[in-house]
Length: 485
Image (cartoon, rainbow, N blue to C red; front, side, top):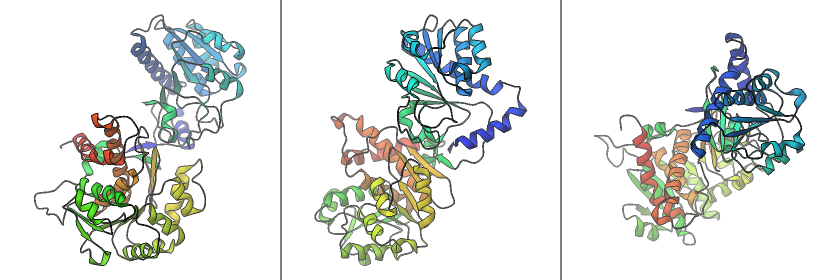
């Protein structure tokens, strides 16, 4: 897994590092990595380095020092470097001296910054680091707003909270972010602000992360594959209660996703049976949960309705000792009667978007989404998947998992129905609920991306049906990344 570390965790690791290495070495390592990224960016854009122009936006503290030292290294490669000091009296002394020795220009007047930066090919954001909080100050905000060239952020985009990814005012929009020593939550929770993220190791010894992402190869390695002795029952049988006469599409999407996710068998319950069978004749259809037969997990909620009958069927399913995924209408019912799930001992996965989360808890997720999803999982003793471009998965007593989709292609009606069907299939195959939710989110995001760039996508946005059609391709891609497959 790839870990993400809070500002406090990184500062503690730095405090452990500094006594065991020569003074200044961690900053030099960070600056060397930053200079290498800037060099690569210049080459990719202009084909050369010597004679190119780079601007540095330098604040107080170590991030400004990283930028200044990187500027001195770029000067030795023939790059013209100009540093704009936003807090001249607090600029990093050693870094500033190094830049001046290398022949870099220094501007200590923010009002003259735009003139000094005119003609720059790239600008480095060294305004604030992990100790910074709040939006950009007026001088910095004015300069950043006028820039039209790519910005490479040192450690994180200034103005974005390192722990929550929240930006409550002006902030840097980076083309590339160079993370020093460790990835921070901002790199997953506000990836659209960070651009491409490159990690530069500086020798930190880090603890087990409290926020992490499954690596694609891990997902591929853990995805269920039939063994020599498997049959349709041992591969996992999913029960799906979704859709209705009013919303038959939800039944088709959710059931189809369970089929595509390599379930051994899918049993459908509800009034959307004719529509399901028209698309997936291999699915077994019944009218009531009691008549379904043996299943190893349940999915309830997409398009199921919120009337008394739907409530009773949800209660019947939750009364089993099987893993259950609750989505959409099922979450609305749980918001009215949380006792239905709070007393369960079997695994339960709730998959709310922000509005459904608010209905469940009585408050919005807020800027600290990680804390919010962790709190709900602990309070209800369930697994919670909070949807978003950065989807978060929390289960009691374990690290929160994050899946940064890399885009918002799956933000389309019915895509959540597909996601819940995939989670249900993985639970039926015996996967742990947190892993199942995170792995499903990764496959779902890849399928959306493939769909968006496929020949039959037409113009964005994509449809949930198109996403579903590319789900098997996404799973095959993940499996191909796993060693030995």
